Figure: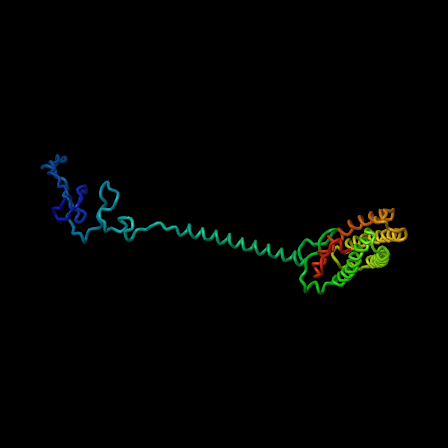
Length: 298
């Protein structure tokens, strides 16, 4: 529909021109109103306000019943038009990043605390002291701190004794094989006799070891002393058995005597004590950079 005043094409649903506000539909002449009391002529309704040019007029009123501004040029008329305030999720995104940052910091603190606790345990500075009871391993120590540790000299003395027991144990097996096979029984008896003397000396050295500065040292010493005592008893019984076979001859199979049974029983007791000692000693050996041991080394 064209405005009869300014010629602007307007939506037929508009009541007035969106530019000059001139009513698009001119009403028919209103009937004369009955005069008010005291009036001598028919009453006319007050005239409509004078038309003003668009430059002086304010923003056009919204169309009746359409729900959006009458002019597309009005600020915020359509979504995306200049001047419209849009919702931006900045506060929500900021809050999300803040929560993630807090979680990352908490995770970093937890990792640092875990590493510090692990370092404390590895250096023996943690709240739980290792080696405080029977069978407890010694706390790990760096080479620098172990070098100044007062227990190092004591650990070296124990290791020197273990080297001797290992040599004796290695020589005993072949000598017993000679007796079992009725081989060089005479030479085997001489070897076992020497090993028995060496084992006696080793047992006495074990009893005189100083282990007060070693974590779990007294328990390890007790197990070593017990193991060498059993081994000495077994070697003495093996020697008596070898001498019997030497003196009575060996027709192909050596006789089984009470000395042989006693030697085997003592060897069983020695094995159990050696296993306890090895379990206590190897953590100490690792602490001071010494070789670990097995029961066959004793």
